[in-house]
View: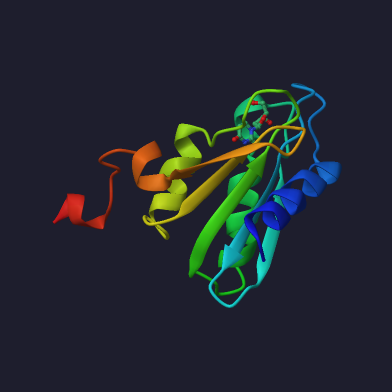
Length: 130
Ligand code: THU
């Protein structure tokens, strides 16, 4: 699975987006260590805070099947700008994969790589409560 292929899967996952309020479809694809990929899309709600981002859908699908060994996440938006995970998603992902590589893509498939540790400096974790 190349980075480009994972970005392509994120772009395709946008087809299932439910985004009638923002009109902004997002797709995500998360790669596990054995090559398995889980995809997700954003799912909005008339009660806006109930909506969920594509990244947390993809990660939750994987987590619900017992997967925690994430290596790379691709996220793709629907504009010329590169789509970066929101703060909530950064914290959510940090719980399971603090060393995650994150590929932030635009609608054309152009992308930039970031480390999650760079996107979320000093994230809160279990050690923070010790
Ligand atoms: N959204 C995502 O799904 N992932 C991101 O990385 C950024 C934002 C969604 C949330 C909402 O449904 C829409 O994009 C506009 O914010």
